[in-house]
Image (cartoon, rainbow, N blue to C red):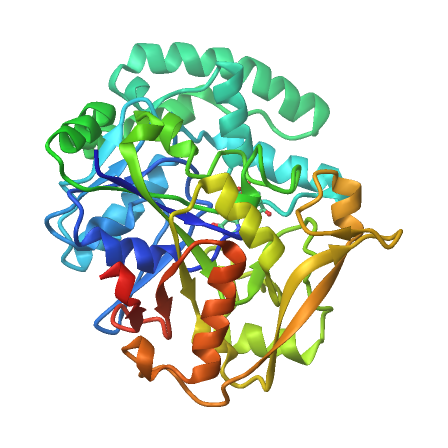
Length: 430
Ligand code: IMP
């Protein structure tokens, strides 16, 4: 059964959208399995920039059915805005399928995300304030509203009243905010129904029909391995499971449905929000500034400047394990071109001098480790126009080889610029 997964190997923003788009051309279905509009995927086609938050990247191919799976949390207003944007630009959005089992992000989720972050003060997580954590929290707490509830106003209202009783108590008594109005929320959400109802479907059934017919199904991860709720740098993580295993719950397939797991890794590291980051360069470091400038390292969604550092191979090797990645795609290699020397982190050293070859499980250790670097030579020339592996400078090829040897899986793609065609396909991926 031919399923393939695209998954980020770091803290997000590795350039997954463009690879999903690249691989989607072979697929029948392109399925988002977790996250919500905290994601921001940028795809550039013929110089035209598309920024997607909820709609799967495969939408730009007319033969692909884009699917928003049950594991996603959906803000209907954001989805409709995105549909409108795509329609205005000539993309037919009627093919999009939306799982009736996906959970809805409600206005109180966004409000609680905002106020609880403020409440945490210096301990804040640095969330995107889109209501993601509170929506998944309600799902686990079994008081969430789902997309299918939009189709039954009575059930919608009954569930909303139940939820609001508790939410308004918390908002007014704990956070000193005004209560939210059930009528207003109901009217607003019911106004979305006409637009969304034709898209709502049994997406698990669709996925299995495609797999049974031996069609490729591409599962598109949002966020990344070290933002995973279980395996990331908890609590500085998102509230879903971006790792490949998340496909099983978030799309309704078993592990045997997945054949190919493509890990996307940026040639250096970035992170937004709070949390440990062993190779982080201090603010004002000229290397970090150059990475931000050349890599355009500002959030697609929030505009926040990303924290930057050299590539962390210890984390990469761990990510390969957590995802059982079958291969890697290295992105933004061109950003490293001006550097005479390029560092990669090959181990950590703890406060007491202990050397760690693996990511330490204990957060207090991880917070304090120092990176141990290997220095590799730079290539000193532009590579944006390179289309074949053999045309990459020797030092750039060596860098890629070093990464794959350390990670233990082959690199099958290298991106050398933001456009769809700035992708070097390595021979074994052909
Ligand atoms: P949340 O997902 O909004 O709850 O945010 C939790 C953490 O995940 C924060 O550190 C965010 O910056 C981070 N995060 C969420 N979505 C993305 C993303 O698409 N790219 C990078 N970081 C993200």
